[in-house]
Amino acid sequence: MHDETVVVTAIFKPVPGVREELVERLRVAIAEVHEEPGCLLYAIHGAPDGSIVMIEKWENERLLDEHAAGEPVQRLDASIAGLITAPVEVTRLRPIAAGRESQGRL
Image (tube, rainbow, N blue to C red; front, side, top):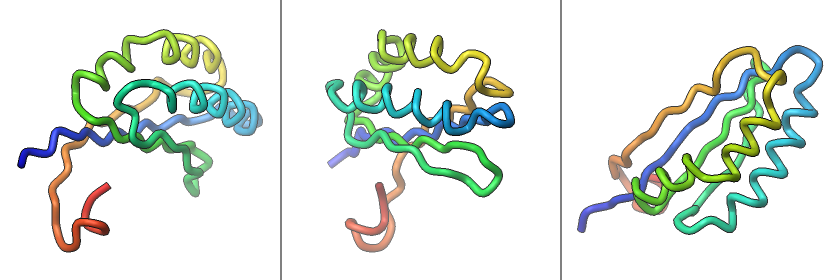
């Protein structure tokens, strides 16, 4: 069976002093995105350098593309303008299963 899931990392580098404001704006978007078709995981994590790393998992590329072009992402982009030092660094990944299925892939 072919696994069509897509894992995404998105790295947000906050302007000094606004990290918590960035987190709050991401929280608003997360609640909305969790309702989108195909969203299996959409979660943020703090990195040691102060960046916020979003880890996403989508059922397939088509649903991820629809999400990326959708209104929640447009609203998020507008709401974080001025709060990040660089464009969000987005990487799309395909799973490579290894070891136990429950531990060897997202």
